Image 1 (cartoon, rainbow, N blue to C red):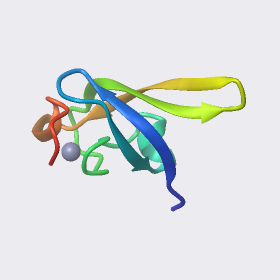
Image 2: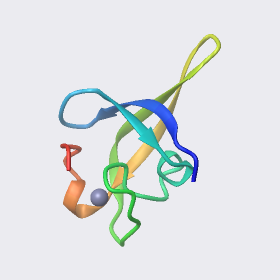
Image 3: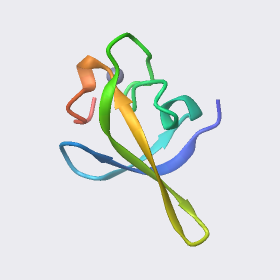
Length: 71
Ligand SMILES: [Zn+2]
């Protein structure tokens, strides 16, 4: 699956660069580990660059990575 470079701004923790899959970008998989167990919850936003700025995406994390801290 192709990866998209983006900035991840977690609910807790530092903003950082990530490479995410389409499933992660569309909140169908954990933003940290890429798995899709039950209990995915909002974890912050990912921003992808566009010509005149950036687009924000609500992303989710599994219970293990809910805090948005690095795995
Ligand atoms: Zn996870």
